[in-house]
Length: 130
Image 1 (cartoon, helix red, strand yellow):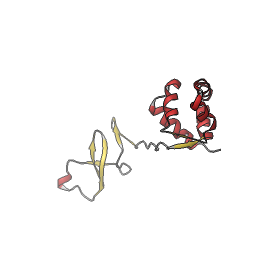
Image 2 (cartoon, rainbow, N blue to C red):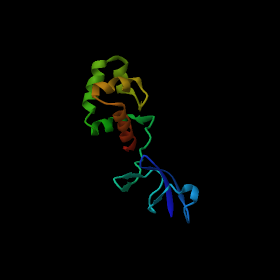
Image 3 (cartoon, rainbow, N blue to C red):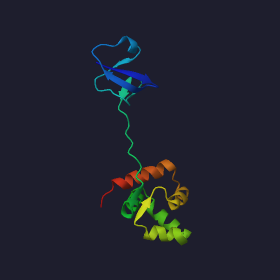
Image 4 (cartoon, rainbow, N blue to C red):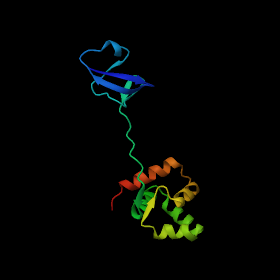
């Protein structure tokens, strides 16, 4: 059987045992498929949500394709043209877009993007292949 230590309805430790050791008597017997990271929601066990890491950079094509898919490309192009200077040059000539770029940080609020939405945009871009 599998026993687990539950904190805040989430399995934080789990062991396969033949019988429950006395020192682990407060642990919960889990269904066979449940393991570390699973969450109990209203009596039902749900698999952990795996969030992919945010890529440090994506190609120009990937960034533009992701923005196109999210309906942000035209607004981003208009903003960079209005900003002019280095922002416009970076937008026009960059071969890659970095998540930690000051240009990205500066444009994001004007596009209505939160930090989490920027991260998700980079994840989306990273999954796009030409």
